[in-house]
Every structure is written in structure tokens, then in C-alpha cells.
Image (cartoon, rainbow, N blue to C red; front, side):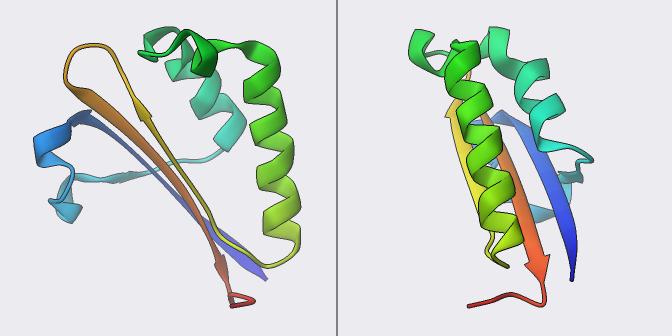
Length: 89
């Protein structure tokens, strides 16, 4: 089993243009990097981010995918996706 990781941030209106998305290496690092820019105070909470990271690891170990989305300040959006190959679904 192996995984593919993708991160994208930018104007929400551009999100549907798949060609501009870029691969990411580690989910926890990406969450920490963008956390200060999250629009929601709740999403910026470090404990909540840690729980999300642990949950993502659990899902990946089960052969499942992880997809997270966060609204950033202004009209920006952050998408983080981890895809498991082969997928358990």
C-alpha cells in the first residue's frame, strides 16, 4: 500500500481547475503551516488539529482516503487530500 498527497490553496473560485493543485508531503505539517490563516477560530485550535491528524493516520492505515477542506481568511480555500493505493473502498 502507498499514498498520494495533494494540497491546494487559493481563490475558492479557482478550486475546480485541477491542474493548478500541487502535491503535499505530510498532512500534519500542512495543517500547522496554514492554521494561523484558517477563518474559523475552532479550526485553528491545536488540539483539534492534532486529533484530525491522528484520525487521518487511522483512516489511512485502514486503506481509506482522507479529504479535508478549510476556508481561509478572505475568499481563500485550502484543500488537503490523501489517497490510498490500492483503496479499501
